[in-house]
Picture 1 (spheres, rainbow, N blue to C red):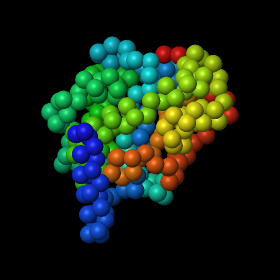
Picture 2: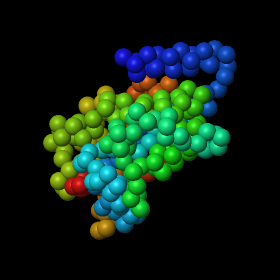
Picture 3: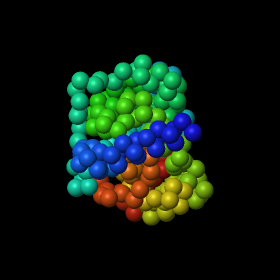
Picture 4: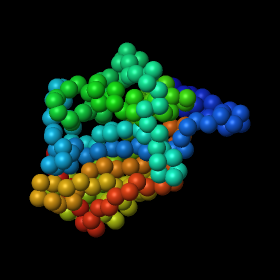
Length: 227
């Protein structure tokens, strides 16, 4: 109920800004979730589990990124508004479960969240303060159960290869919206499912069809590694 009220307030603020001709600075969000098995099974990244232990074998949040319809995006919009953990103190346990850092050295996540807020979150601060920004991402994570959508279609993280088209269809069937899939490569050069992008309106309240997809390409068959 609380989140619905916040979402309604954000929507009303957005409409008022539009009436007044004030720009919110971006057109939509990419909500990006990553598969930890692909992050850790790649030569591109050094993988270190958080200080709180190995994360769950599930998709976790990478970020909520303001974007423009032309494919570009704002970044680092307010150097005077750094990440302040005290503003999200009631969300920290949920952030550690759903938004863990796998980068090295091991951490409890604060540097990752700071990076995401300062690079991306500050560009939506006209609508979402720090608490609302992280709460919005956590709520979207619960609304879009990517792993369950894939499992329901018989697509499981067993190291096997699956059709990219079937992966997209499974996620669309589960969420109602078309995803964009980012792949990376394992140490043997095999393409694997790495990140899932879904789009959200500029209030952060509703999933939408993506106005534009990022650039990049996966193979027609990609691996879904274990974790």
